[in-house]
Length: 166
Image 1 (spheres, rainbow, N blue to C red):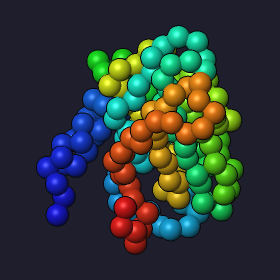
Image 2: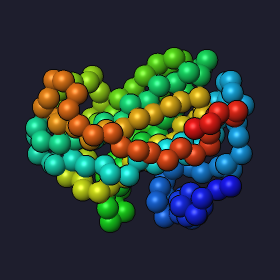
Image 3: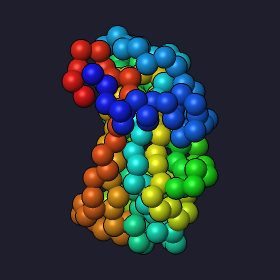
């Protein structure tokens, strides 16, 4: 049985209120292997925070994704402020069995791609991809730290991998 919270979040996505520019498709389960195709929403990570300012200072948010697809895939990242303003909308290729980290600004601990979003409080990341064979995590962290120092963001997964219990 689907919870009311999940039903509400899906209705926001389907009406493009939350993610807008991410291409949306049906939420049917996808095959477990090589399902590269149209972009589909995979995750929403609320709680995105960036203190603004220079790279490697203050607080930033990082999203880490890993692809276990046997082919190259494309991931789309959309970052919004709490008022819904889009501050980043980019796509990146991810290789077969590759990993990719996107950050709101430069951070010291991970090799990553910076979105240079500027200040964000209570924002959201939307993640879409051409395959469900991608898993992602997110965290808010000290941008200058050289050891992990932050908090995990709990995302909602859409379009789960067929046969999984995500």
